[in-house]
Image 1 (cartoon, rainbow, N blue to C red):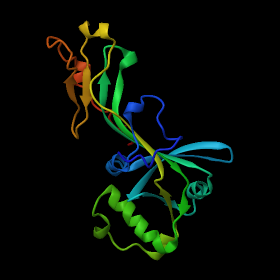
Image 2 (cartoon, one colour):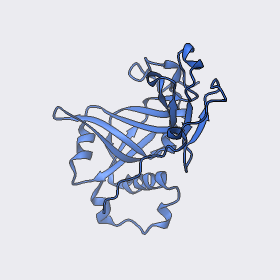
Image 3 (cartoon, rainbow, N blue to C red):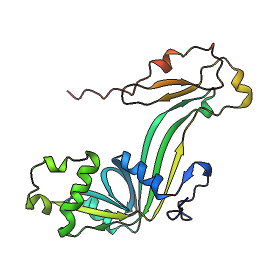
Length: 222
């Protein structure tokens, strides 16, 4: 397996068996997601902000208003951290201490630099088509003043790691005999599917709090 993205800073210390440093795994997670969280420090104050991004091979692109402070702070930061997380399901163990989440995540470390004006439109196309493939060609042409009002940053994917958890709960051995439903709530596009732990007594029914679980509804802003 290709470990060229592995470094002393991205090597996993906890549950290293869940770690992946090959570019193929990392790229697949980055391509499925489209919102990242960007961490940086400016004037001694740490920030972590959500942003939409796009990927082109081994480069990530971020964009924002040229008049804003965010992109300038990112471009001048000594180091930034980009994280992406895909939540695939809830892991309901027989103990709260062993309950968890099935997920796929990526951490990318490095620095960002401003994209030249000559490449700005190409970079914006990459971001738009990353979120909705093929969308750029359906839009009206971008205006020159819109390009002037937008800053785009690029960050090379050089130092990165992925961490993935899959599968059923991992309970204490003596807890497997307890008559407590355990398993995973896997997330499809519609509603989660309750998947019993392979070691669960088939006589234990799925409780309502598992079978009826839904993502919290978005609050009504009216």
